[in-house]
Image 1 (cartoon, rainbow, N blue to C red):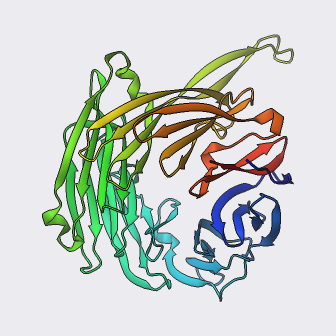
Image 2: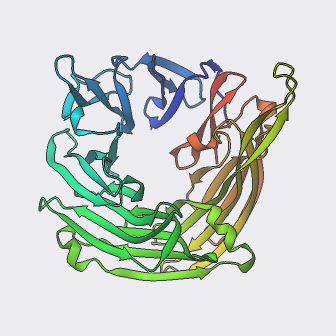
Length: 451
C-alpha cells in the first residue's frame, strides 16, 4: 500500500478515471474548477492540468478510452433557447484533440422538469448511447437520444415510451454491435415491489424496438440486472416476496440474448433457480440491497448484497432563549451492516453462501465512508471496508475464493496512516490494484492497495 502527498481541497469531488501509460488519472472538479491530476506508480503527483473547459458547462459524464479522456457536457446557446450536448476528448497529457463536437440539441420547452443526460458504452468503447428521459408523466418515461460510433457520428435517433416511468428502469447497456438494451419492471411505488420484468432492444440492423417479457411471478425485492458481455447473457436476481411474509427466496435467472434481429422471437429462458431463505431472517431480507454480480469466465457468478437501513433519534436540547422551553433535534443514522455473498454455478444453483460480519454507523455524511469497495482478482474477490466509521480505526478486507472460502484480515490502521477511506469511490485500475480516495483533516489523498 502506498500513499501520495497530501493535497488540500476537500471541497472537490474526485472521480478516479483509471490507469494509462502516464499513470493513474483523477478528475477533480467543482462548480469553479475542472482539473486532471496524474499520479505515478508510487502515488506521487506528477502533474496537474486545467481541463480547459468553460466553467459554465455542466459535465455529466467522464470516462477513459485507452489513453484518451472522454467528457460529455451540456452548454447553453448564446443566441437561442437551446441546450447543446457536446463531447470533448483529451490525451493523457490533457491536450484537447480538436474542437468539441456538438452531438445533439434539445429545446427546453420539451421538458416539464429538469432531467439528466446519461451515457452508456460497450466494453470495447466503440458504441455510445447518449440519452435522457422525459418524465412529464408519472406512468411512463420517454427516452430520447442518439447511438454514436467511436468517431462520434450519430448512427440513429432514439425515441421510445417506456411504461412505468424512470423509477422502473433497472439498467441500460450497449452491446458490441451497437444495440441498446433497456431492462425495466412494473412496480408498486408505495411498497417498492417489482414484477413483469421486460427487456427492450433497439436493434442496429432494423431501426425498430423489440421487447421480451422475462419474469412475472409476483414480487421481487431489491432487483438487480446485469449484462454478461462475454457470454451475451442477461442476469436477473432478487428476493421473491409476498405481501404478508416478506422475502421468501433468492431468485436468480439467466437469459440468452441471441442475434438481436430475432430478439422478440427467439429469446429463451435459461435455467431459473430459487434458494429458500433462513426462516429466522426472512423478513429482514427486505433491508438487503443486492449490489454486485461478478461474472466468471466459465459462466458462473458471485452475487454480493449488503444490509442497509436508517434509524432516527430525537434529542432534547435545553434552550435558554426560548422562554425556558426545550427544543428538539432529530438525528438520522445510516447503517451498513453485514455483507451476504452467494456463489452461483453455471446451472444457476446456489453452490454456497456466506454471511460476512460488518457493522457501520454514521450520521450526516451520506454514508460516504461506509459500505465497501470490490476488487476482482484472478482467483478471488476482495471486499474492503472501514471497520468502525465513527472511530476511524482499521480498514478490513474479506477475501472470497471461488469455492466460498472466506478469509478476513486488517489492511491498515487509518489513524496510524492519517487516512479515512471512501470505499464507494474506489476504482480498480489493474488486476491487483485498487485506488481509493481518502479525506482526512481536510486533505485529499489517494490510497493504492496492492494484492
